Image 1 (cartoon, one colour):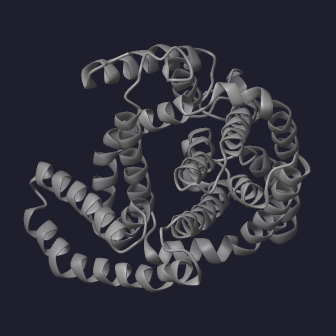
Image 2 (cartoon, rainbow, N blue to C red):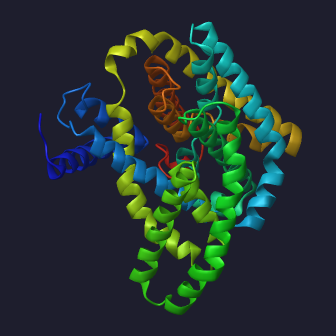
Image 3 (cartoon, helix red, strand yellow):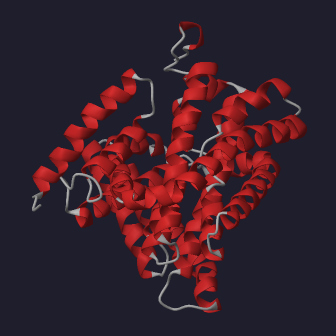
Length: 388
């Protein structure tokens, strides 16, 4: 079915508006609506949207902006303090989840490389769901919010490292040189970014900060320019965008930039999650249905239990630990990105990528239900639990 760009985006955003409305009425995360829409309208569904190259490209831009904004929230000093606070819990939990994921994947017959990437994808919890279902007052003023942000930041950095490794392992030049190259080019990219910000970007921002549209364009140009420079240096666009964000996080107008770019990020992220759903091969679902359900069920129990034990042991916070564990009991949007990147680099088989997507969707859905029904959150069904 031949479709133009206007038809493609009309189908995506009209469909997303309808399904997200249903999701909100049902008090579900709208990310599920976007993925479901992709499954319905994509090439493995009704085939309404056929230009998947356009959809994938636009979705990739959304991930670039997502990581740029993530970097903008990571001021170097605050980032160091957060990482120091959460290191032990984050590392032990990551090791437990990775070992469980690898063992279960091998048990269900996946190859060593598939199992390795599946285990990496299952390590992380959803930043989007975790933050969206946390009341604003808790997010900014309570110990729960501080601990959750610290753990999610550490996981985000681990995810960035995993993405670098996948990018390197999937490079045309194989061997130890390809794996060690990021260790050289990443610090170089950081140095170029730091010098450029201080020599060019900050003076421009200081001189023209009253022209809001100029700051908006400068931010987009900086983000995408660093993304392209990272690609040229053999890294991924996502890494370049992340470093671009960190490099200006200490700027006085960093938060203004973040607020200005969020609608643009959300626009492209809708397309990204649609592309995730559209890439879900429905013919492979019966093949991975059993392992997906089993792994999702085990991780929905394992993640809250592990976080509960670690937070209680490290921070001596018994009341807080179950609350935090339940809120971080799902798989992450980074799992979808790992599946997407691993598949595109030829490191991950189709069934394994479908398994990661299915487990992620199941855990996002069930975990959101648990939080909405049992813990204070902005969209709670019971009035007694609703907190803005």
